[in-house]
Length: 493
Image (cartoon, rainbow, N blue to C red; front, side):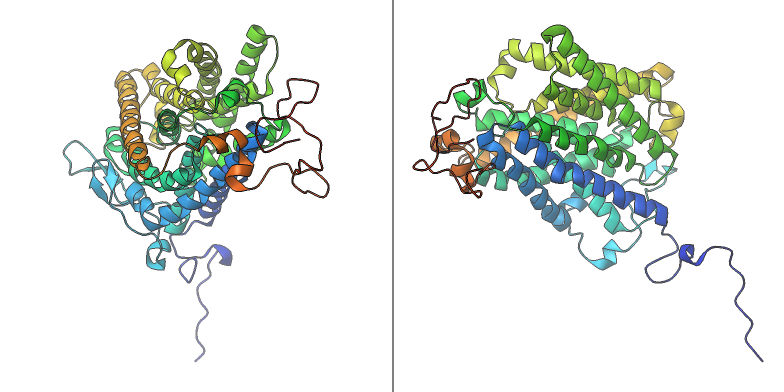
């Protein structure tokens, strides 16, 4: 007797799960979007910030600045999969820290993704209010997605110390800061730590990434010390067009930065991407208008700063606020950090004394803190229900528990600020007992050629390096029409 045919399955073969590399829990759309989002965030760093850093600094620091970013990305990847992922998103060790462990074996990586400390209970600590986060894709996707966020945080921090930090010190700083600072913020707010369960809102890293990198960068800049006097007085970008190229990658990559944090290709993800662009565009325009009104010139570098502050400000709120709130947040992010950078920085001795090369404390710490507080004000209840573990969450303008939410946001920010001030200072104090944090003076005067033996622009002949016996003298000081010899051994076109 012939065997009966298998029952008809209306689901296309490509979407039928249950065998091999397509388990029944895998959602191919979610998995594809999450890997695309991770790639977009990775592109923000490599080549986005590598290009931006290499072009926004003085010519003599182009190679060093770009390489600090590239090195940090590579170092974070290895540290992340070796121990730091589970410290950020693994089983709970302390209320603010997960248990360290590797994320390298296939038995862990091909299973369904899960954040084991994310199950949220009611006040009786027995009844589940929100189930454990278990996205419909493998753990390997989650590990890589979170890895690129950790990497960009270190790269943003580097913006505060460009042009003088000893590269050997940076090589040691990266794994230490990732381990003892970043993992704490990530677990506390995202991985199931005490701020996560208390209901502090940080949709995509306004606190975990931007506030922490801004405060830690400023702290590191204090301990490293300033650039040489000549560089502090004059530090022109060596290629404004490439600054715009890097900024463009940063802006477009933010679709993955904020759009990937619902851990699914869903309606909230779409809301986050739209709000991100609304706020960034508004902030860009406001910053430019302020430059025109007060300085009578629209600054390209200023506009890029405004774009960044808008992206940072909306990050903690991206999928939690309505479009009109994104515009309001853009107006605030284009004006408040502008005021702190252009006015307060020059009048407050503490800010002017610390040499924060790219003003990361303004573009990331101020904008991140501002965004977090405004999230507590504007978070819409229906959108909150799509994302947050604490039910009935809402912003202050919606009444009810909204007033308490603003307080939660401020407390969460203060924890991140305090932790980064203390831990970053300890790391710097320990490192300077091993290696100088600041380059020696002869390297500071010369730049890339002394530090790396390489230069960004070798334009003589067929790319040969400058030779004083064969080539005319040029100064990197472009403020004069006539030619002057430069003060260092490296002569730059």
